[in-house]
Structure formats: C-alpha cells, structure tokens
Amino acid sequence: MDDSRETQSVNAFVTGYPVKHSRSPLIHGYWLKQLGLAGSYRAHEVAVEAFEAFIASLKDGTSGFVGGNVTIPHKEAAFKLADRPDELSEELGASNTLWLEGGELHATNTDSRGFTANLDERHPGWDRSDRAVILGAGGASRAVIQAVRDRGFKEIHVVNRTVERAQELADRFGDRIHAHPMAALHEVMQGAGLFINTTSLGMDGEASPRIDFSSLADGAVVTDIVYVPLKTPLLAQAQEQGFAIVDGLGMLLHQAVPGFEKWFGKRPAVDETLRALIIADMEKH
Image (tube, rainbow, N blue to C red):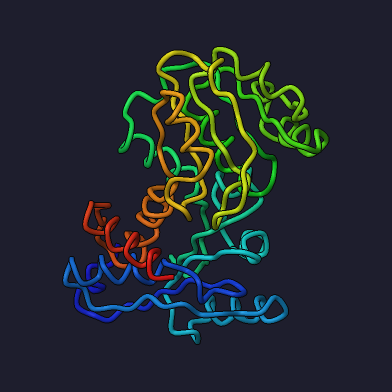
C-alpha cells in the first residue's frame, strides 16, 4: 500500500439500492477513529440504471473514492464491470469489495472469509467435522458453500424448497456438494457437525418452522447468517436442544476487514466494543 494514505484523507463507500439500512459506515467509522486515520466511509446510494456510470467515475478518479463495498442489487454488476476480479469473485459471479490499484479496478468477495472468521472467533474447532448441512440455495448461500468447501468439508448437503436451485449450486461448486429437497432435511442432518441457515427464516421476528436438531453429531455447531434478531428462532431452537450456536453478526464484521485494509492501509481488528456498538444500533431500530 501507498504510505501516503496515512497522511491524506481517503474516501471509501458502500453502495446499494437502497443502502440507508447499511451498518457498514458505523463499522468503518469506528475503525477510522480507533486507528486515528484521516478518511471517510459513507453510504452512497446508486440506482441500478446509474451503476455503470458510477463505476466509470470510480475508474477515472472523478468519484473521489479509492474503492468501496457493494451490496444488493449491485454485486453481480460490480463483478462484471471490474478490470481485475479475483478467483473468489470469479466462482461466485459477484463482488462486494472494490479498490483501485495500478490504474485498474480490482474486485473480490469477502463474504466467505467473513463467514469462516466469525466461526473461528466464536467457536474454534467448528471445522473438525466432514459433513455440513446448508439450508437454502439463494444468493447468500453461495459464499457459505464456497467457505465450507474450501475449509475442507468432504460432504456438503444443500437443502432447498426448490431442489433445482440447490442442484445448480452443486453443479457450480463441485462434487462435494449434494442437492436435496426439504423433505430430505432430517435424513441429511444425521451425523453432520455443522448446520447453517442461509435463508431469511426468522429474520426480523418472522415465524420459523420447528427443526429437530437431534440427529446432528455430538458437539455439532448451528449457525445462522441472519443477525436481526441476534438470536434467531432457529438458533434458539438449536440451543434449547443442547447444541452450540454462533450468530451471524460476526460475518458482517469480519467481511469488512479486507476492504478497510485495502483502502486505508491498516488492518483493523474486530473486537467486542465494535460488536457492542452494532448491537446497540440494532436495538434502536
């Protein structure tokens, strides 16, 4: 990184449509203050039809940004418009982190790293099993499948209401991924050491179906990428049944680390103060 970034103001963004709900400015603002860096990170809403022009302004330097984060619905377009997307982005077909380097726009996707870093922090040893079950085959499941496969799980069972969507992911991510309909959920859970919810079940207090986790392996971990509420109905059920749980907030926090380091030249830490800051913000809204 260019050391001059420590003395000049560097500006980064998060863009989406809408984007006002994003907690990324709180996260990066905390790190900027903690590390004493001159710079800014702000939400910059861009409509779908204006996104290509925004990326062009980023590339030619007229936007005033050195890079930023991309959220729904722009992740696929960000990947396509980047000059140098990396292998993680290539496989996912989506990018969430952009930065300018050597006159070119680079792109990566930090969601899979955020997922594994959260589990490493909150429950070390979560990856000792060979068998994982992933509920859901939507866009959010892609980075999770990638993360679990790359961590070395030998069997990854994706269960979805529409089995064809799960099969598409099995075809994309390789022969360790197996697609199943919802009716097979209990069967494929037998002996699994990791259960991951990537659906919106239980988000914002919505009802969630009852799941019997008893067939999971002893010492299995249940996690949810949803973090509002922090303890989703699914996590509460798993805990009541005696299993270790990990909430999804840490994925949001850890996925932000690589981008901050790219833009501002310092690697920030995810600490309990930051976690408490975001939880307090969640409780206000």
